[in-house]
Length: 330
Image (tube, rainbow, N blue to C red; front, side):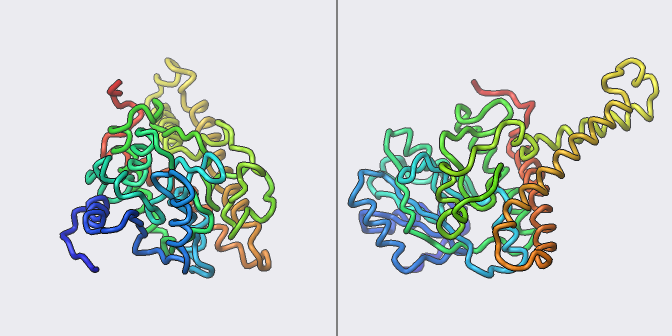
């Protein structure tokens, strides 16, 4: 049945589907995703063999999605799952998600305040809050088309930044003072940060299925340039450098923030950001087939996306009040 409604947001549309569904399981997929032939079969098998309240699976970009789309697939910030084991998930994205209808109704469905994104994170956290588990079926796969332009990718990440702010307001206990969510599991995907050489071709379909076994989690220092707040450091050192050049007494009264020191600090944080982006793009690209000379343009685009992703989220977060200087509710 095709149900036409007014545009009231993503979560509201999911609730409309839940209300219309007559089965025991409500499965969700996005308009830019295409299910593998036996997608529902593998989801149903997992439900019949476990007590999981929800089950999800991997979403993989189709082969030959396009030049920019291929780079977007290897960039950070995509809708990917977070696993605590091979069969249990902490988070499953809304483009590949199935939930027992009685459980979904018991927690009140999706929160309609999440119009663009964040609804799947919120529903997973509410499921865990009830003490229920979320399963993961590696065979329940959907083909998910990445954004096909840099502008579309930036807009997507901007929306994710706004959704993060809404989530932080609702779940302050899930976020640290810097505004970063804490995950107990591992974030998977080809765009995830990597720290060492790949093994076993990143698992099935190159989707890092065995990441927890073969790849170390990135440390705090390695993750800092990936955070939106890194751009605030760049802006701080740039502002103090200009201020020290324009107003000379500032240099003598505050030598640690004077123009030369601030310029050096600015160079360090910019270099660290560029190096981290280039390394992340190279590690995501180097296992691909084909001659190396054909990879220069995708490598450059992927590096650009690595740089744009934290900036997009940084500009989206303040729209909903998520700033490093915000007042915490607890």
